[in-house]
Amino acid sequence: MEMTMLIQIPRVLNSHQLSQIREIMDQARFVDGRLSAGKAARRVKNNAEMADSPEIMNTLNNLVMGAVVRHPVYQAAALPHKAATPFFAKYGPGQTYGDHVDDPIMGAPQRYRTDISMTVFLNEPDEYTGGELVIQTSFGEQRTKLAAGDAVMYPSGSLHHVAEVTEGERRVAVTWIQSMIRSPEQRELLYNLHQARESLLQSQPEAEETRKVDVTYINLVRMWAEL
Ligand code: NI
Image (cartoon, rainbow, N blue to C red; front, side, top):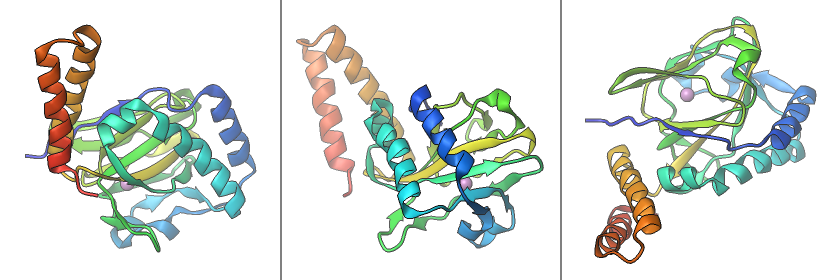
């Protein structure tokens, strides 16, 4: 049983960071997104991806990933081992990304396994029509279209697509994470236990139950983590 949990991360980027990103993307050079797609995905992918100078790509990468890695929900839910340099994509009218699963291994020369896919929404939902990220989960189809600066994480093995944009422009950063915890089921258990632990550490820091939950969380991470 795959418990394909979607996790929303609110306010990864603030309005200052978002306007810096917008300014850079307005000036940037984009190429056909099919160039970076795997064999099967290439047939269903229709978007544009930023391909500018290493300096500019670096600036954007630092802006987005710097904020992502500081976010406590990201740390607790992803238990990241390695994170990829994001792709910056835009979808105009008629553009879409059909059903696919993400490639299992990415990165060159530093390869990593894609356990978690992440989309960071870079513009507001009222700036485009359509463009929902649609993910197949064990609870059915989940459609996600978040505020600028918010992110969503989901297991990379879940079938997903981007609904066609019919008006305006959708801008996102997408990235992939190799987790210390490979199994989505184990990650979900740990994330729930982490939330219970945080709340107990707040409300009853001295209690015996708190100590047990804390020690159990720590030792489960040790038991399951692969580096
Ligand atoms: Ni994908």
